Image 1 (spheres, rainbow, N blue to C red):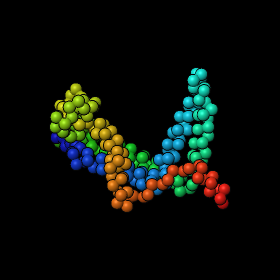
Image 2: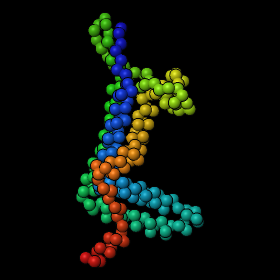
Image 3: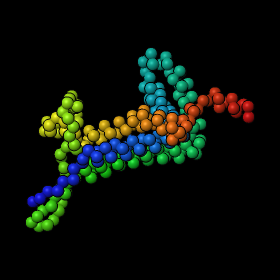
Image 4: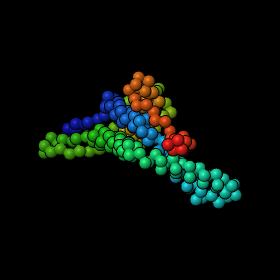
Length: 213
């Protein structure tokens, strides 16, 4: 029986990272143009404040209840004001599905690169089996203490320097966010290839504008 294996090479692994970076750059562009990051932050803060108020039982926590309630009310007004913008709602929808696309890309690469086709020379039939070999190898001196993590879940089986699919996808997914927002995003913004960052909503400025109108 002859086996033809479709294994992930270094170029294919870098292609996964490049796709992740492109998707994260698109999310950054949407955020800069419409302020979606501010909305996500407000939603997280509101959930945290509500949970904190619901579990406030100690005298120390109860002492800050009134302050937290005012902060919660302020953030809820900001969020309600931001969500009245139809363009923002569309941006949130698109940004959400860009994240879904990133997850689907990772799953598709995992399936495509870790599945091998097995040909039976006798019967001429073919089937698919899971390929549990490393994605690619790097020098042992470059991984050191990270060797076992990069080889997960085969740390005891593979040699130092072997990189598994799950660790590579996890590192690529997190590193792409840092690369997009910390490196490429600012460079593209400086070159004029990225939308201008939207100013955060200021309730006091909004109230002043209403009074003037």
